[in-house]
Image (cartoon, rainbow, N blue to C red):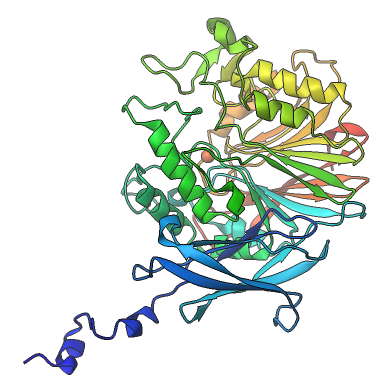
Length: 497
Ligand SMILES: [Fe+2]
């Protein structure tokens, strides 16, 4: 006869006491996060973990003025549903502007870690802003020493501009391997986010301050454009995108109103930081035209090509942002604040690798007419303190922005800081060194380091510190400052400090 004792000693599943096991399953294994800080609120995020969760779970959250939760500012209950991966998106409102808050969640008899977040300054308040710019955190290419460092930098905000996950399988010799193969369905994307979010340094960075996030291609599939796939595998990109966008929303501090419907999600957004700055966040994937002159036998996808070989490259009808977003941006500049920070996915400044004009077609160089429209409109409106923030190319770039990059004496109308990757491998530095003299508007190009950029923004000056991780294969690696630049809001263009 099988007794309960026999079952337990044999290590078999004690089906008659499931709660005893449930209590052992960590419910908040992916940490907490916050995002989209406004003057009166923000979004708080977590996702319950464990395979034995009910279909619907009530999750309590609380937000306090102090780390000890003695003075509660807001609390509530959110329903976490299996259909949305038991994710929680709480949106406290009516908060005080320009304040730090602490938050935590509770469910299934367990409590999450405590996160720290803040509201934006009031619209009429003088303010300063310390912001980290980061992108491209390929798990199997390196550790997250950059996040470990950034979590301790007293940041107000992180702007993450794409490639939060990568969809690829890992090579058997990878530093740390992706679980699962090439991502092809919702379960796969969910598992990949959960793996990335298991990293303690990334969890610390999310818990330290609110984030603003946009995506690039690898959250769905390499080089995808709109609903066009760049692979010859016959993938149904629309179906893949629906799954990927859902998993993205489930795993990030995004508002409930942004929940994707049928593979469509409004991501582009802007946020005001007192009288100091307006931050614009773009989406250059969802609405773009396919890359010009795609590789042989493909309907989309990127190449590096000579402009003279591709007439479509300069077609003024082609768009990277889509007409609607282009207009939204052109009409939304702040003309009465010293700074307009434009956070978006990729390098905006022209970067030619040949004197005759040779360009990579997935970035802004592949959409030169759209770039000229954006920068031309900003110049026409005399947009104050235009600073473009980017990522994607796995290299630090610092550049002057011009409406016409061929005009060596043309007016500089803005500044660009493009951050290198957190962990994804970069191109050979020699290729960038060779190209740099061909692009005199470019002050720096470094693909040989991993890291991020920290920006200290004040009314009179913006300072950018370019960070470099000593050893990306070491999670505890020191991080040092590679270079420092400043920008005067009345004098566009970065100056080495
Ligand atoms: Fe990347």
